[in-house]
Length: 456
Image 1 (cartoon, rainbow, N blue to C red):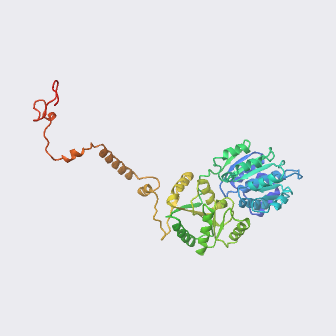
Image 2 (cartoon, rainbow, N blue to C red; image 1 turned 30 degrees about the vertical axis):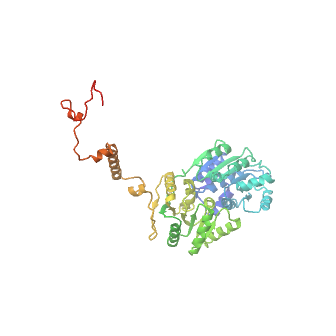
Image 3 (tube, rainbow, N blue to C red; image 1 turned 120 degrees about the vertical axis):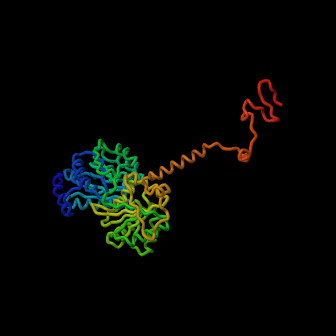
C-alpha cells in the first residue's frame, strides 16, 4: 500500500482518484531510496510504473519544503516531446490536490509562450534538452534553487546526441541537487560516463536486465523476400488478425510516409508520426488514435518511448530494430501492465543478422510463422536450412561433413602424375638400371655410371 511508503495524504487521494492502490515493484524500491536523499540509477521495464516512481517521491520532497518563494525546484528531462507531454499528464493527475505547479518546455510549441510560463517559476519543470538549452542561452537564469534533477530515458537521450546538452544544462543547476536517472535499459556504452558526471554514489536499482523478453508478449518473425512481399504480407496480416490497435515501426521517416499511404490505399485506418512532423499534426494523429479513428499507427523510433496509448495489442517491426535496446522499447508498447500482447518482426535476408543479434541479446528464440498464401521463398541462411533449426547443424550433418572433408584431404594428398606419365599408363616400359639391380647389365645404349666412368 502507498500509505506504507510515507506519502502525503494529498498524494494518496490523487492515487485513489485514479484507482491506483498498490505500488509496483519499481515504485516500492525507488520511492524510499529517493526520499532518503540518495542519487539513483533505476532500470525497469517499459510499462512498470517508472513515471510515478519518480513523481511521487519528488512531490513528497517538495511538499515538505516550506519555502515557496524560490525558483524552480525540480527539473525532469525527457528525450521527446511525446514523452514530455506524457509525464506532464501524469504529473497533473498526481498533484491534483496539492499547490504544486508544473510547466513544460519542448520543441514544436511557441517560444514566447514558454518563456512567459518560465517566468512564473513552476516548482516542477518538464523539458526536452534542446529547447531548454535554447532558453538558457537566451535569458533563462540558472536554476540555483533546484533540489532534484530527473533524467527519464537517459540512454535514449544519449542515442539522440544530447550528451553535451545535458552536461551544459547540469552546469546551470544547483550543485547540491539530487539526481535520479530512470530508464528501461541502462546498457548504453556512454551511460556509465554520464552517470559519473552527474551523480554522487548513486544507489542502483536494477529490476530488469533489459535482455529478458517480456513473458506476456508473444514474439514472432515472418521471413520476407523484400519490400513488395512485405507490403502484401502486412496488408493481409492487418486485415486478418484480431486486435484493437496496432503500432508499426519503420527505420526512416520516408518509409513511414510511404507505408502509411500504402495501407490507407488498402482501406486500413492508418496514421503516421515521425520527428519531422509539426507538433500540431502529431497531436492530431495521437488524438485520432485515442478516439479509435486510427487503428494502425506507423512510426519511427521517436514514438517508442513517448507514446502511451492503452489498447495496443500488436506491435509490428516492418523494419527490424537496429539493436536489442530499440527492439525492447518498441515491443514494450504492447503487453503493458500485465496485459497480453504480440510482437511480429519482418525479416528479409539483409535483416537476418539483426534478428540473430537481438535474439542473442535477449537470450531467446523468436517463433517463426507464415501467413498462408504469402509464404516467402527465403527460408533463412543455407546453414540454418541444412540443419533444420537455428541452433546449428545436426549431429548426422556434422558427421557427413567430416567424412566429406576426410575424402577431400585424401584426394589432395594423393601424388599427382605428370602429363607424360599419364600418357604412358598401360604401356609396357623397359626396365631401368635400378629395376635390374646390380646383378644385371644395363639396357643397350645406356652406360652405367660409377667411379671413374665418364659421361658421353
